Length: 251
Image (cartoon, rainbow, N blue to C red):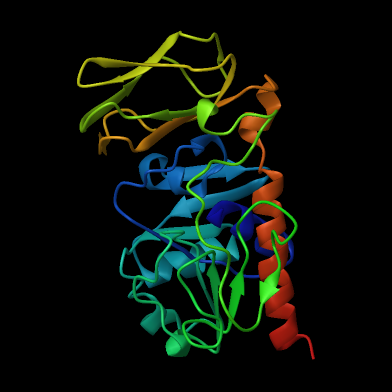
């Protein structure tokens, strides 16, 4: 979701700086700027993110029209950059320290935040009629624990770790897979695709996982291009964030 938001804001002319953890756990790596943490750069639909380590490098990347991304789990950089807008896109289903006074405008995505107390605005992230709505008072809908429906399937399309350990994939994002095919493993225990389709997402090889953690995603529609483009959900949420910013500053 963070990449969808950053992409929409970048396309709208905003200067964006992304903060990340040292080992991002994104499954939809084909369309996630966090891959720049490992690769140095990541291009998503024509927008480039580049890993940086200093304030000076952030300025250089901005001058090149790109998005700087820095490993800063605590987002301590906000005290240095003093942003006009701070967006909590962790999607942890809980508030892990974001405060109303972190910036002149604080926006939070999804459940775990109360608009007017934790953030100025909360953006609805649950699929359905309210997706992408800007909440001025109150909170987003609670986490259902059910993956979004694609072609009538929800939990069936998601791959989860059978145990704790190191993840190893047998397929790549965009590969076609069959039902029952072994597509990955954790500590030698195989992970099978529950449905046929294409690999929409896969965790990066070698990362540590917890038991039952999401490690992959099969798209039953079988359209390879969908694996490398931003989802309609992320675009809707990005639109909500853009609306919230304009409510504050476009007056």
